[in-house]
Length: 152
Image (cartoon, rainbow, N blue to C red; front, top):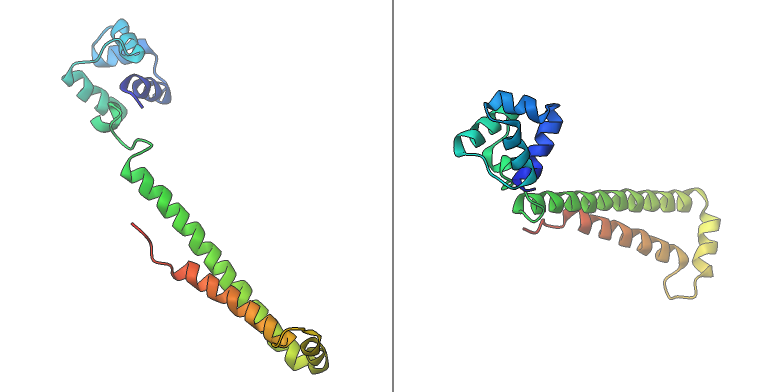
């Protein structure tokens, strides 16, 4: 954000009128108006007084802090993306583990049905093997996403 926009936003956020801010800084209301319109810039001492008044750094005040393309913002976005990928990895790990547990329970509690599934497959692997391979694939993909190294 440019200085003029930042000044306007900070003044509004603090609930000050141009006149109130001018009184606090010892300048005219017209000076504040020119700063906010971008037709003038304050002296260095006034910039320091503004940063103290709004309790922000000079970088923030003059618009040099955290722009949309800054490394800090990109790092934050990357971190959020990594968090989402890790969350997806955790979800897939849980789903895969539940599938394997259900398959095991199914094989133990209903061996006849398990045998029926095994015979219904047209692939060399029996139906139980296919289900187990699918669960293992979900687990492996979840583990990959969860353990994937963070790129810098």
